[in-house]
Amino acid sequence: MPPPCSVTIVGAGLAGSEAAWQIASLGIPVRLLEMRPVRATAVHKTADCAELVCSNSFRGDKLDNAVGLLKEEMRRLGSLILKTAEACRVPAGAALAVDRDRFSQAVTAALQAHPLITLVRDEVTTIPESHDRAPVILATGPLTSDALAADLLRLVGGEHLYFYDAISPIVLADSIDRSKAFRASRWDRSLRGAGAGTGTPGPSGNAAAPSGPACGADDGQGDYLNCPMTRDQYERFYDALTHAESATVHDFDREKFFEGCLPIEVMAHRGVDTLRFGPMKPVGLVDPATGREPYAAVQLRQDNLAADHFSLVGFQTQLKWGEQARVLRMIPGLEQAEFVRYGMVHRNTYVNGPRVLADTWQVRVRPSLFLAGQMSGVEGYVESAASGLLAGLHAAALAVGDPVLSPPRTTAIGALAFYVSHADPTRYDPTNITFGIMPPLDRPRGGKAQRKLALSARALADLEQWLAGRRRTTAPSASHP
Ligand SMILES: Cc1cc2nc3c(=O)[nH]c(=O)nc-3n(C[C@H](O)[C@H](O)[C@H](O)COP(=O)(O)OP(=O)(O)OC[C@H]3O[C@@H](n4cnc5c(N)ncnc54)[C@H](O)[C@@H]3O)c2cc1C
Image (cartoon, rainbow, N blue to C red; front, side, top):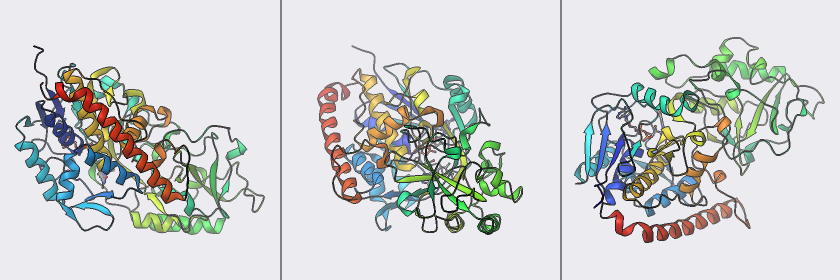
């Protein structure tokens, strides 16, 4: 008889709660260690598992939208988070939004009622020991406590663990006015084949390496869209920016920003020309409309493989979202911009996934240790829960000696795992799920909406196939730990 197996999970947030449910549902005992209420974080307000720290929305719920697809896949994989969200749903149009208190209380109750889950309230300060029969999942989120973060840093190396995220806004490509924005790299240094990558390039604050090009502008390695400004336009933009309202600043946000990742409004307050010598410098750009270098320029960089998203380079900001829309639409070419994501600067503990993780969420240097949730390098409630779901299934498989196999990259959940483990590690940014990180269709047909639905149909068919294969390999052993 092999020794009994079990899984330890640290952190009962969205990822940890989902992982615990998946593992226990396969008949394997789980110890779930959560530090609240013994120790608080800067943003959680309750002692409940899976507390939603900000918005109460799990975003879109239709199959023409990547997060809708991810949710459908999670439903098919028996997600506790989704089942509970649906039970606590509040009206929110095409989105899935919940009554946040009922939601986290119901998740907590489900975990506590499960006979194979033991919920322990204590802060974990070092990574628990693990081995194949007793894997560990770390799911301590963006606000991982300091002692545990320090131990993780020892394991993965300082250069692969980040503590802040400085996010630039992203706009829909279709909403950029190409009669004003022109395509060029500084000094015309466009390098063939470079630029798109598999990731979502953008700025990341790295505690271990505060300087460097992470938040910088055009590195000359690809084509950029440039929005040129006259002096008059710049001065009006500057005035609006320095008078715009900032988002509420949490205590952790008051800590010093890394010089390389300063929010644009902070830079602007240093002087009227600071932005013109920083992210808005026009040097090396010639506006084809005038044949001259503009007074200032905002650069936009392709942000996903599908080329339908562009990020504003070096434009990390803490302005309120409404203010961002108002001020950034003053940029020539962005008057009608549709924002896919607004800029943010916040505390965020996460690893450089491609350096640290395999596509099964296992730490490469210690495969009996899994990372899940925001700390594994994904972004968002649904993505965090999805990574917890897979880390849970994989940890359960490892514990009972079954093969640990990721779903195909053509599924949203598999694409997320692939992105986290294979994106460009030199400019890694946590990602939301988008169709842009999934492989394109072999024979794309129809308009954009039809192509998205076709990607979803392919994903769901491939998920079913993966599930059928998994049932064949795991069923007997998983139910008898
Ligand atoms: C301020 C802020 C606002 C955000 N707003 C949104 C939003 O509106 N929408 C969205 O989709 N995403 C948002 N996110 C991003 C992300 O989706 C959430 O942070 C999400 O909760 C991440 O899930 P998780 O399971 O990884 O972490 P969490 O849900 O934070 O769970 C981690 C758990 O680990 C516990 N823990 C930490 N350290 C230890 C330790 N040493 N020992 C034991 N337990 C520990 C924590 O108490 C917590 O319960 C936000 C993030 C932040 C920081």
